[in-house]
Length: 330
Image 1 (cartoon, rainbow, N blue to C red):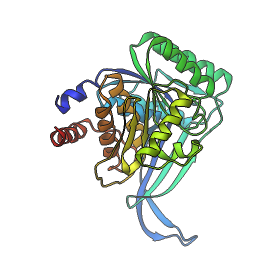
Image 2 (image 1 turned 90 degrees about the vertical axis):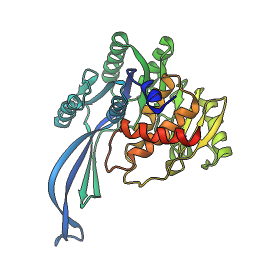
Image 3 (image 1 turned 135 degrees about the vertical axis):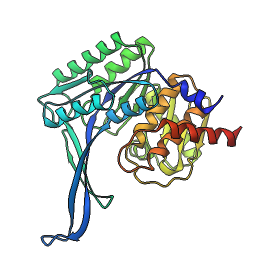
Image 4 (image 1 turned 180 degrees about the vertical axis):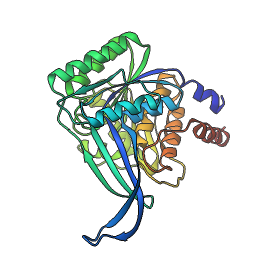
């Protein structure tokens, strides 16, 4: 099977993405002097760019691979929420699943770039859980989307900003189980063990180290121990642990393997996890074998690290790199 034929299998699948969405704002300028007021550089501002971040970046990656993302989340009823709602259709995403709440502040991560280097990041956010009314609205909207669209998979993208509460997590996973819909989780620490029964559980090395009661190293036997621990606590079919420059570990019960990444000129690791959960979910939903899932995830996650800022995967580049991998391994 060619690279193009493999990627074609990912296309046209409807994927529901539920989780914390945010605006990634970039203030870009040049630096030529130090401030007389304090020992800090003066950035001469040139432009401001707002990009989709968090769960919205997952949706962008799904779309970039030819599938159909359906984003569902709650943001603030504020100017930044309005800005985010405007960006969605400009990026080819529907805002039908985006709810607004007067009780929340839209998450915005503002990065100040001078001479193409990040110099400062400013975060504006609420991190408290959704109130009961907002939980109910989010669950109702999720059910509406599931009833009206041919959803093949659900991604729960958790950034610990409060959208994925224990009640939302349990309700969505229960509904997905009843309907036979594949579920995938990109977790964070607060609700790490709340995702009981998710089909794919994808922490990174730091997250599993923070949550396991024993040391975890990026070595095969240590990662197998971690996978056994996670499966015992979560009953997940597939465990994927991303290891940054060391690649990823994949355990589907039948087999567990370390998959090294290819050397890269890394510019920015922001958003790589979003890309990996996107392509891994699509590949599993398409029924691809574990090795292909791992290879695609490695290549796509590494690709986006070569660009500054949060960017989705490029399908043409991924097809080229997959073609090279296939020629080397067949």
